[in-house]
Structure formats: C-alpha cells, structure tokens
Length: 79
Image (tube, rainbow, N blue to C red; front, top):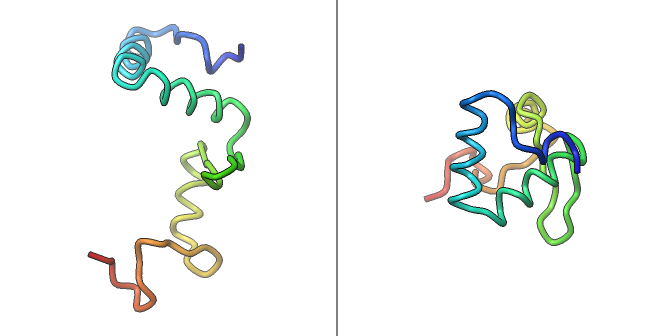
C-alpha cells in the first residue's frame, strides 16, 4: 500500500477519511488508488483522471488547447 491509501494522521484528515469511506467505500478507495499512481492517470473507459488541483485548474482554463464538453461552440453553457 502507498502512503495515500493509509489512514491520515491529523484529526480532520481521519474524520474526512472516515466520512468518505462510510459514504462511498468502493469509489473512495478506487479514486485514492488512482491518485496514488500520479497526478495524471489514463483510465480505460473513463478517460484521463487529474488529481493535482493546480494542473486541473490550468487544463480547465486553457480553452485554446482543451475542450470542455459542457460548453457549446459559442461559449455558452449548455442547459
């Protein structure tokens, strides 16, 4: 197991871990194991999972190189 898959040390992190594993036990562990592989991971049938917040922000804000499926061609959000 990696350091990310273990129970965190601080009080609020332990609480957050407990809440997340209680609410979505399989999904939480799956996402944590994907995040432990690196900041950007290609997952078959899902796509690319980005676990680094700064990198995700850069991708979402770079409309010249990346597309957002929730925005139409005239840059208006879809309903």
